[in-house]
Image (cartoon, helix red, strand yellow):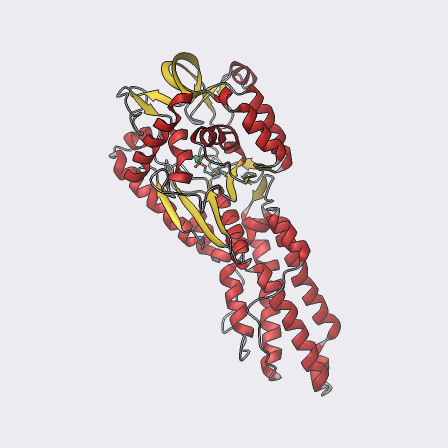
Length: 471
Ligand code: MSP
């Protein structure tokens, strides 16, 4: 049995969760469940990123003490993770005392790669990073992600000497020691790496008071990304504990917008600490709404709790894991969501379970169900390569095949003609196919997969209420 560590990006708590935040959780959880079925022991981290100016200013704007504001929002995120049926083992808040103390120790251990210097440049508060003049010109002075003008910032800060690590990072990416997925993002990262200047890793306390103090310098606070990235190891106990049973992570799931931090600053920190690099960084696309980026100003932000409450958690997971392409931007619209629910979940799967179970119970069919099945090789390959939406399509084809087979073999005719032996074989074959497909469904929609297993294991009884009642 292997020990496997999987991580999710920790969202800023400057608001409630939106549907985009669900992707990291759903993808990482699917992978975690896949690996557990494989016999691995999995640790899955989740958490929240609570420091930084954005959050501080939001709290001030709302007239709330910042501790109260982050506490309330952190709870919303934790509830969201629970509601999504994510099998996490650890939940970190970056305001946890242990995390802050460990971050300071990480800083001390990186000190030989850190220097102090004066810098003047363009800064985006939304992105929490400095912008190059080239980027500034390309975007005409306005951040495309946050629709806010860049600000001029002149400060004396600490810098992490990225130059110390560039060669090692490039080698690790090119040799596959640290896989970056998808492939087209890997190319972007390699280009960014070459252009990457040293990174400012602190802010003066006048600019930023809500953060982890730089050890030994009262006037400076750690840059939020240094504090945030550290969570992946502080949650394991680093540097107080030996983390070698879990680290390096098998896979770290992040959105495309934050891949640069994970593929450049994070590996630099790890190399500086003498720790191995994660085996894979998997970057997903964005959830769009009607083809547009979700934004408060457009007013198209979709509340995930509303989506979850309307059709349940597995409908949510189904849509976000199958119809949102794992690596590319994809659309959420209520129309598409409802059509997927009614035509696919309710018809293809829900009806199939109902029909088969009804016929089997009427004809007194029962069969021993194994608790483990052999996976199809093609499916395993896709799951191992993090191609979740493709793997989900593959499983859904199997469900459709069973529906077709029922129409072809017409078990109701066999029953009508009294062909009992043939009927028995036919239903047992169909149920066996369904149980095998169900096993492959279980990392994606675990609650439903459990229910389906229960229906057919032991004495077969059709579900009292449909698995997916029509909306
Ligand atoms: N706090 C940082 C991450 C620190 S990780 C050490 C951050 N937070 S975030 O709240 O802005 O984003 C959290 C995650 O949600 C990121 O992986 C991000 O890519 C993802 N998403 C935010 N909006 C999204 C969509 N509309 N669609 C898909 N994912 C999106 O960045």
